[in-house]
Length: 65
Length: 411
Ligand SMILES: Cc1cc2nc3c(=O)[nH]c(=O)nc-3n(C[C@H](O)[C@H](O)[C@H](O)COP(=O)(O)OP(=O)(O)OC[C@H]3O[C@@H](n4cnc5c(N)ncnc54)[C@H](O)[C@@H]3O)c2cc1C
Image (cartoon, rainbow over all chains, first blue to last red; front, side, top):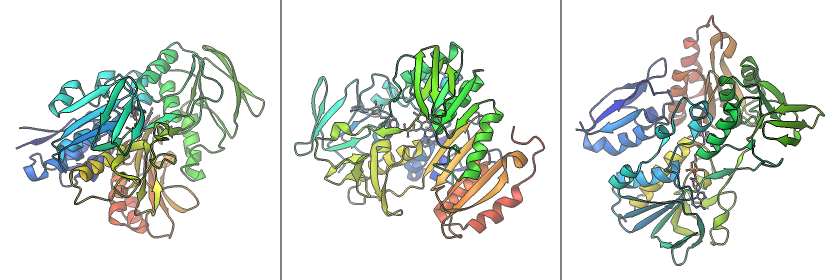
């Protein structure tokens, strides 16, 4: 199953990912992304990939595990 | 329809994302991405920030590599400028290349900076492309002072970056309170303070008469009789959509390509537009809008890709506006519609808390928009709140308890 990966150093807290898929992403108090679920079932793939790609600093990737 | 040929004109964020989203939506036909620049597609927000500062290298801002294009079956046609469109024959005319036939066309030609009205010899810059950023950085590294004309997002960001490189910087804007085209004056003043606290010399409420001299040694003459010496000048006075190549096409063009709520050209259902060049009917606002921000380009691209791939279930495009800007140590975010003569509530203070949010409302209850500085949880609450219809009071109840005085203040 594909998995979501985050580059916590790159994250700038723009929150586009949370707006795109709040069941997968959240922000902590410092504005750094928190991954709520790492595994992405096929039914969610397009939605979560769009949410990951909406990151302005490319801090998120959906990859084949 | 999931086949045929989609031709996308403009190889920046809106164009690239349309191509990628088409594949994600299962589009199986041919995708051609045409762009005037020979450069592989790159991202623009870092051009006034980390790329200008030299803390990010050019490779890391690429939006699409040749390998990624090959993997996704996206045919890149770089270095060709679109010069005309025939909407009855479905043909795109290019300079130096035979015309291309399309089944669906996506216009993603973006916007271009208003040229400097004071001439543009070497040393007087605009900032839009990677090459612009390289040239500006080259001049900044020579040292001397920078004069920035226009205190909008790009001018303000470039000024902050130049300060971080140790240059003397003056920002000039005819508007008395910076950012007051976007925010109310109280917040606008805080932006002015931010720049001054970071050593930027600000001249607001005064225009530029002329710029004399040459690269390394300019004098900027102001309308109040004063003058500012500058080695380098950056002109950031806004952009205009790249739509003139469509003027003879028969498409309705009026400060952008005019589209319906599904982002289809009002005169040709198989022509779409995305990003800075698109003016579409925003159903929730009940008016035609054009937005010059990154997140809009990305969201609109996804919507258009969906509508091309699923013509039976088209989606009206009704985004909640979002833009960020990084200036000095402020991370500024704007959600929805702000400013104008509407009521607002400010929570927090830059000097006391190091963060604040301004909530805008027309009826005293509903949130119309918000400006957020250095406060990630407030950003989330506002973005999600806008989508779910949270009230201003609801947000106050949630955010006010989170405020704690910060002994260090804003700096
Ligand atoms: C320095 C800078 C900093 C920014 N910072 C931020 C920020 O912090 N946050 C934010 O939200 N937004 C920011 N933006 C705005 C954001 O980058 C734009 O909204 C976004 O680039 C719009 O994308 P686009 O693809 O619609 O247009 P563009 O990026 O303008 O791309 C259009 C492309 O089309 C090509 N083209 C034009 N005419 C033709 C033609 N006739 N034929 C073929 N190709 C053509 C151009 O060469 C260009 O490659 C910034 C912009 C700049 C310039």
